[in-house]
Amino acid sequence: MLEAQRATRNEVMLHIGKSVDDISEEYLKPIESNWQASELLPLTSDSTFIADLKTIQEQAQNLSYDLLAVLVADTITEEALPTYETWLTGVQGINQYENNGWMKWLRRWTAEENRHGDVLNRYLYLCGRIDMRQFEASTQFLIADGFDNLAASDPYKNFVYTSFQEMATNISHRRVASLAKQEGNNMLSKLCGLVAADEARHAKAYKTFITKIFEIDPNEMMLAFETMMRSKILMPSQCLRQLGSEMNIFSNFSDAAQRIGVYTSIDYIDIMKNLIEDWKIDTMTDLKDTGEKARDYIMKLPDRMMKIAERAVISKVEHKFNWILA
Image 1 (cartoon, helix red, strand yellow):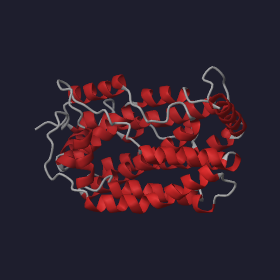
Image 2: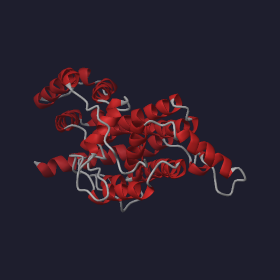
Image 3: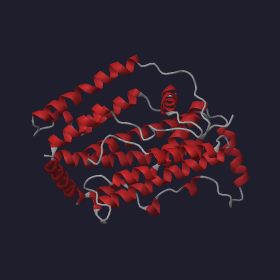
């Protein structure tokens, strides 16, 4: 039974792989026209570097503690890109030893994502409020520890995960951009806004992959969607920790994000609703009994989760992260 299921997924991935190049062209930008970190932040070779640096550091002083903590944790998450590329090359149907459509997509997606860590890291270095060694150690821990998104090598489950995760990162970076602007930091707002725009395009691509899978293998895709919703979408920074401690500080980061409204449990539910709407789950046909039951579960889940979210209590105490200088 398992071998038959694997064969089906491989066949579906092979079929969709023939159109991946077109999807890449629609949702990824040419390197020649893509923004780069060097265009957005001052260079030491600039005659205005000292003055520009002073401006960056003056504006950074206005950033609230929680916002700065969320920015650092978001940057660490982006810097852990090697983990994500490694995990995706192991997904069933993506043959890393061939120059096929899937590998071309993955490499181009990775190339675009790589800029996010570059530009945010460089901002943190210049802003003068970050202990860079502590920040860099947390990044290294996150990459070294790895993470389990509970999708194993199943492409259906993994693309549900990436669809959800790209939407979540879009929200987080977009909200940080908005808050930075409110706190008088137009430069940081622009940087996070550009990163958010990339994430929005990437989310559309991964959602398109799922749409195509639903067209070919609706029942198995529905079951995979249900499985990921039951297990919940875990954030890539779920194993976040700091130098000198084994303590997992992801919940502290999450509390900070929720306190300032960057990413909340309501956002999680809204993303779920968006996926249900985009993939037309309520009108899906050609389902077996198992798929029908899975769809029923998925359709009821947002309301169930909303009741839980309404009762949730978020800590009002700011956790002191060693990344941030006093």
